[in-house]
Image (cartoon, rainbow, N blue to C red; front, top):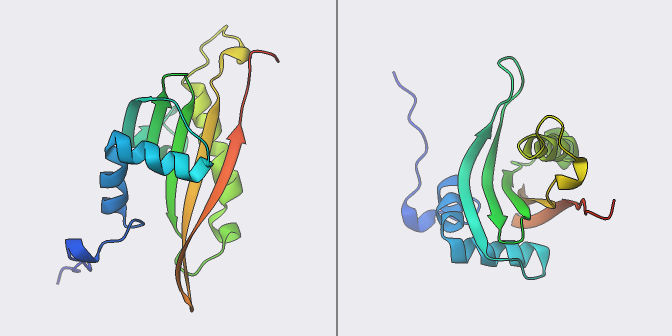
Length: 152
């Protein structure tokens, strides 16, 4: 007997559902609106956007899959992740360490052998956490911002 997945009707999907989140974030205008809402300041024009971008650097290393990866016309990189925590804590999901690993993995793409660290882009990594609690669903944001500037 095959296990049947619990499928929702389109009308029942919320922003935190994987399908809906990807569809919203694939639209450059909506994606920019979401990023600006999270950061609470304007961002440049998005020039590259990918959903479910996979980064794997060694055959035996741990790969990552970025929910939404964007770059803007100023060279800033945005990684926006949706976390459905399912009654579990931020600590259980190891979000601070996972965020650090994701940012490090993104940096690898920008720094080639012999390159200068000052050439690393500004990277903004945001996580939207969908918390399911006894009093109903909530959305919260966790943001790590590592800005490396040429002044270093």
